[in-house]
Length: 169
Image (cartoon, rainbow, N blue to C red; front, side, top):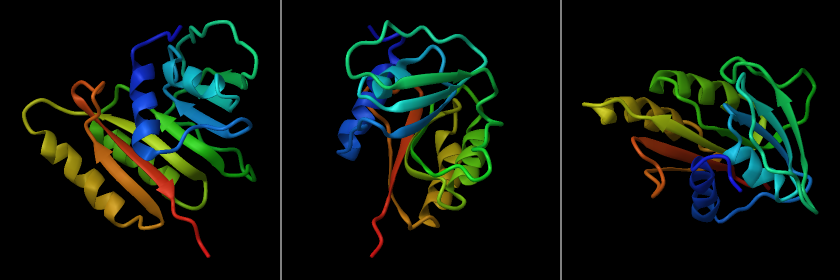
């Protein structure tokens, strides 16, 4: 039923994080089209704000599904409205340069805007480590998150960075 093979990437990320979306959780999916990652959350009862100028190709919803709100906007420019509560998940799988991914994640890591994230970074040919190092350096400074940078089985020329906010107290 998934509209793209990227669905398999986010499912593997859940497994690697040992955490799965729950009913009622709030999700921001940046670069959502055609909807593979949105589907992974919606079918578990989450409420997804899918951000992408392109169309979503989701199957008909079934029992226990959450809701999907599709905003036709550029995922790199989307920001939570002022006063909005933190989201449970921020996910992004966009075909953009690695530096744009680092900037996007840096923006979302400021403040308590999210509890978990799964973000893909497409790697350039030739020197992938040059693209990965700024991401590693940035994540090393965000100790409020437990993070992992992995090349998942279903990733092609990309890596996936995953994070969960550490519990306080």
